[in-house]
Length: 162
Image (cartoon, rainbow, N blue to C red; front, side, top):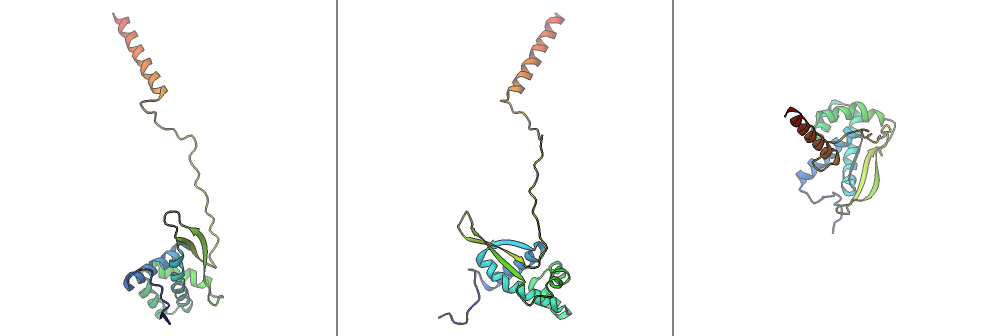
């Protein structure tokens, strides 16, 4: 029976799982939103919530505890200075999971995990450069006509010299 065993193992050893979740939370802090499998998103959520709670506390001990878990100074700094103050009025529920459907390659359920209080991030489509010219290959008609005209000019100049 699996009573009181709520750790999601994700098919990894304990050390690998801790490293994975810490890296996912650091990526979430850095990018405000990450795309991952639904199982990983559900496993990341409690750790991310705990880190925000530590950030709201703001003490030196809380900062050192967060650093011991996340292992990235930049992520801890951003957590304490940016994300935790944004969530100061909220009593939990700092993250949101948005299901995206099945991944094309292996049909794994994919989801976004993001901060609820995150500023709106509008992704603009990348504009392609118009008028971009490509090099003409050996088989192009323009290239052939240029070569023929150069040959005819060369033969004309040789006949004029004679």
